[in-house]
Image (cartoon, rainbow, N blue to C red; front, side):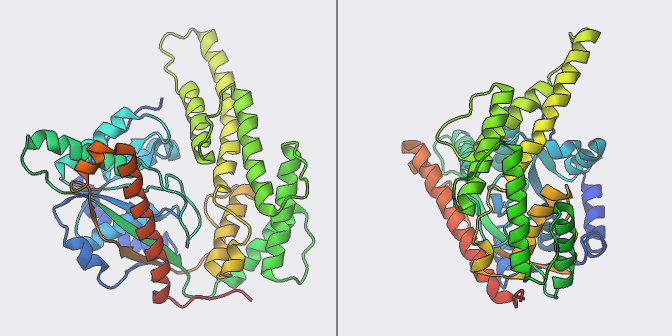
Length: 416
């Protein structure tokens, strides 16, 4: 398993970053501003000094920066949980920044005991609140949530359990889960940028441009992409609708990778869990210690590792389309939703980490009603699984409700 990266909080560095953050948000994040809903900051500040796990939705790769800016706005420094692989980006430089800004790693989908122990320690000590994205992956859907992982509630209950041991019969200090909602909006018209991206994707797929609407051009691109991938994975669609074809494609990719790795896929779990099982198997091989390897063994290991690394792209493809469905745009053809889909297509077709369309953004933010898990501890002791599931459902319900209510604070721009 990948080695654990602990938090190495550096107060001077955090202070410096807070000073530079407005400049960074304006010039590096294309003029992105955070706009809290009325009462959100006050509601959050009323729990200052309290032990809490903050649970925002995770629709955008810039969510960590948004949460850091929220930290600046509240005057309260946080710790953060981040996927282990991001610590290796930019030859490890990204990890240095993350650790010194208060982040620590977790291997998603694995029994990462060191990370779990750190989470329990951070929450039970209560020196800082902890930010964890309960969806587990970037959804790239601005208006909706993927199903939440149960880990947020479970980890918080473990911290409550630790405090109960320390209390030795006295009252347990409150430990809260604070749901949060983030909604990215483009207040100005970015249709020209969206159309340029459509043209680039059409060119890459060999589609002749025409005068169709943006929506129909996007459907043609999606159909061509799906047809290409189905051929790549030796699939033959049998009259299914687009949603069925995408779901079957994802499962076909997972089955193919599992056969190549000779790993049995778990049954009766979501496809995201299957992705994590396979990804962790690859990680375990690639990052296995080579202490006792001979030079020849190292060479053979490196050759096999190079082959396995190729499967990361397959698994990323599954994650990229894990929350996509036909009808997402028909429900509401806003430029934000259109951008959500284009972002996914650019990642697949152009292999880009950032969308090419640009525009000033306002990130609407709201804070839900904190859930005191110490008050649920008796329920947890008598029915752990059911209580964790109930709390997870409450988080989901609150965040979904806030995402809907945040629409009142913007004027949506619709594509023609």
